[in-house]
Amino acid sequence: MRRSLRSLLVATAAASLVVPLWAGTAANAEPPGFSHADKDTLRNQAPRDLAIGSAVWAQRDLLSYDPAAPTELQRVLGAQFSSVTPENDMKWDAIHPAPDVYDFASADALVAFAEANGQEVRGHTLLWHSQNPAWVTAASSTWTCDDARAVLEDHIRTVVGHFKGEIYEWDVANEIFQDNWDAGGVRLRTEANPFLRACADDPVALIGDAFRWAHEADPDAVLFLNDYNAEGINEKTDAYYDLAQRLLADGVPLSGFGAQGHLSLLYGFDTSIQANFERFAALGLKVAVTEADVRIPLLDGETGPTPAQVAEQAARYDAMLEACLNVPACSSFTVWGFPDANSWVPAVFPGEGWATIFEDDFSPKPAFDVMLASLRDATPGISPRRG
Ligand code: G3I
Image 1 (spheres, rainbow, N blue to C red):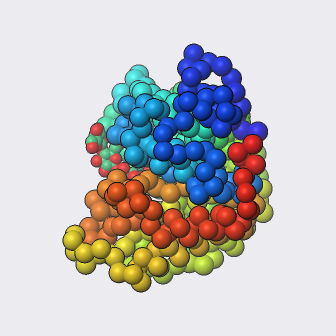
Image 2: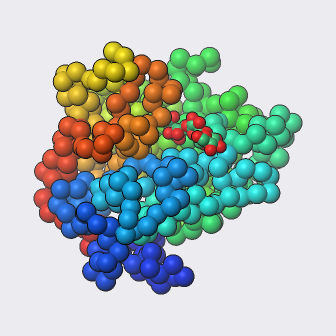
């Protein structure tokens, strides 16, 4: 059993927040308007121990949480999902804003929300080229590899240690490979990532140690490599497959491979996602869809998607979910936030949007309906996760 579930049963100073709501002992804490026994929710239809998650930005959406009077976002998040991922709150710039300063406030709020709603937490992320604080960017220009190792080790041990027992999966290394359209092609990001740059002579040693430090800080967490453009079998996932084999041969406690699942209808869908998951699972790893969304090119800001686009979006979400359902090693399927108003997509891809599974009034889209049906078909009834 994962520690985060066990921890729900342990009395703590915040006992009123950690009693599992489905135990019946805290029914009064159940937010009005939904029931954890509701069969029409993604979390309750999930088969085996498959976690169904969403990202949420706690700093924006969870800092004030009253279980008796949740916001609509909080209500839907608690009702539909058994896992939450901090969209930004555990990233370096949020949690380690100055060399000797760790700020856990919004990440702790997310963990408290998860405990109050019987959810698990996916940690995101410990080694990434983006959203590093200014002090890292500045200092890294003169780092030796030993300097970089010391900073990264302190960060990983401190952050993973802070949440020990609360996080079931950690994205340890995020987006560490370039794409084939980047200068230099598919190779480790030894330029953009300040830690890999400082240790460019042997970046794999640093990556391996990042996993070792995380494992020592929380031996029960499943430790992931995670990336976009990593759904199907392609040049990038071939590089990950080689890296995973090398790390495992070196005894590194790598235990998961995550495909983010950021898709666009501007491009085709790579149907080799299940085969890709199967090859990583054959190495003994868990696999996961960690950040699913499907963006749609829209005619203009006022015009919604066409019926054909809506149907195609639903099919893409469902295809990713089906790949996960069909591979027993797939441990979690996470969508990257909701509703559309909260999506990162329009700011980064102008002209694309409508990417999440809930409309801005929180009504479910066809993608939600199709995924709910797939979960229901996979295993009728209550999942073992629900006890
Ligand atoms: O840093 C400021 C903060 O100080 C301020 O309070 C806030 C006010 O709005 O803005 C903050 O910056 C925002 C930041 O998230 C929060 O740290 C940026 O404007 C915003 O653009 C940034 O976007 C995030 C993005 O990662 C950054 O790369 C998105 O919300 C988040 O969805 C996105 O998530 C990534 C995954 O981590 C990795 N995979 C790709 C995925 C999508 O890009």
